[in-house]
Length: 66
Image 1 (tube, rainbow, N blue to C red):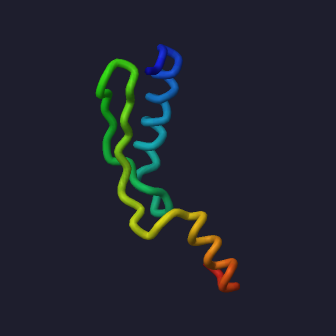
Image 2: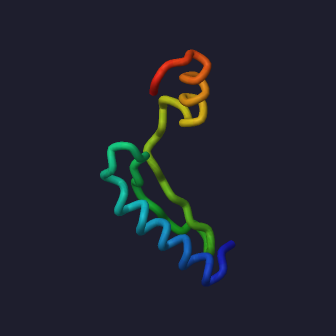
């Protein structure tokens, strides 16, 4: 559970994510909610193409540009 400072920090992160959600190179923010006191959940779009690390590693292995 988050204390007051942690909640403020988490809410700031949510505000930043909300502001960046239109950026084409970032996974979009969808919503956030508090389930229990001090538990913040952040819902983002699904990255069904896998994670960035795997994409970069595969490109390096195949010696191709991303």
